[in-house]
Image 1 (tube, rainbow, N blue to C red):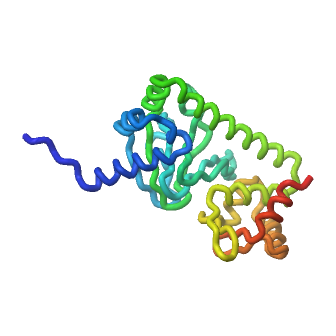
Image 2: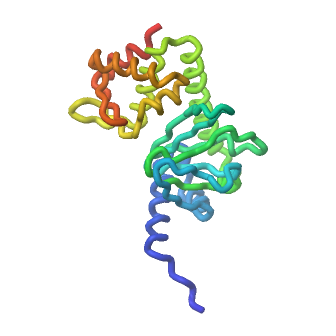
Image 3: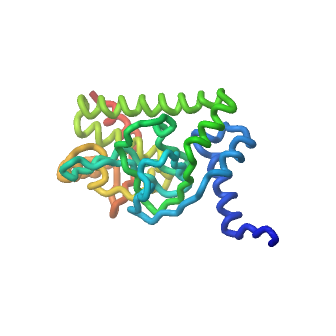
Length: 242
């Protein structure tokens, strides 16, 4: 039998994955031949909003590369209370910890928006890194950046005022999702008060009060599950206040 020709969709998906890795925070510095080798074991998945990623095997050792949409990293307490660790947008990758072996996996992954995600087997990623050890430098750099952010978030949670913590979280989201509009920086991600409460470990009532104060001060505008930063300078001042 003659070899089966790849479908047009398969060709489009391969081109999309190749383009996405070129723009990714971890893989953009890889030599083309290494990225091409990695793509042989990659797969592209499309998820509807709120769909669990890795639902059939949550312990599978894969890196998740966000092509479009938003990946939510979260966990639930024994009492069902949700904590959102991060919202990752296009160009970002998680979880780096899966490059290690036998690491307990405390988090779940959901499509926060309709999302397109590349799944990369960790063994294939490690093979590429080991073939050119200098590439491990980017893993270390990205891991240290995230550790710095985690320490900063933890410090804010322990020492910062609620007002400061809310402002800092909105600034971080604006850095990832902000798009310049006439009214300011539009956070192009679905963001409810429940989402913010889960990210900060606060009640929805507290979040409602804090957002209301920022609206009253002219710092942000609110629409249905959307936030626009109108005064980024003042928001930075609030986030940096003692």
